[in-house]
Length: 117
Image: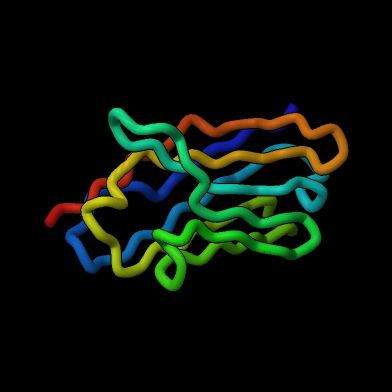
């Protein structure tokens, strides 16, 4: 069982920056594929950025060049740095951990990001 606790959301003006953190419980964080997802009102949840245990990363086209995912395996923490924020980035952001071997997914409780125009 993995518990994820997100932090760092808030209100920011367009063009500003925010950083999100997701701290995971457990001792095998290095074997988990981590990801940040977001869901805006009335829309489906979408993948924003992902970090595989082997080092590969993925970014949605809408955030490429603006968002950066990173992880600190020693601290069991994954981060999302968001620059040049746009009003359309407004959403609840969720952290997800997927066990590389079993494929089981764990979700955080979500943190709200609001970008004002």
